[in-house]
Image (cartoon, rainbow, N blue to C red):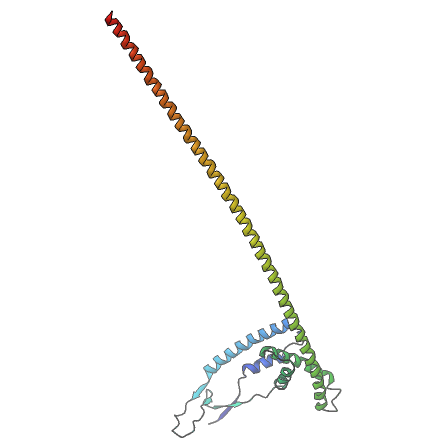
Length: 268
């Protein structure tokens, strides 16, 4: 069986390192670097998905018979469309990958407490500085070889890491100070809100008390009016009864006079 040679599909880590190596030297702020990293990750994810689709569509796996007991199980071999075995060839390590491998531990030793993502960003920044450093000093020390250049870089690296460590400490202190100030402001705002709420509650109670007093006064006045009206009605009823009594009395007197007149007429 003939053998065809193809390159190994790069891993996510390799693609990310390549993207960082291609980072433009014009990026100068954390926001710009974060934006570049975000866009690069999107492109890498899309690329990996496309590679997986292509791999599933074109790769065939030759299954070997199950190994007998005691025999070593052979690894399944991948073949192309023509049935040729695919020989995997390791991709040579790039200068950027060599740089990251050699500097990651150095950065962690000086700048402690970095998250994996921030560690990666710090190494990427150093790579940009290193490239400029090599361009600037390579001709100057070309006769003395790369060892002299490496020695100079180590000195420069030590200065850069110390400086960056101090910057990050200052940033942390500023952040803590801002958080403390914010916490103090929030506390003051909360106290103001509580005081305002107490004041409003007191005012509402006073208003409620005034309203209750008004309701009592209104109730008393209404009761007084009702009683006065009732008294007037009672008085009116008494006067009416008196008038009716007078009428009845007058009628009786009239009847009595009439009877007396009739009695006089009969006697005469």
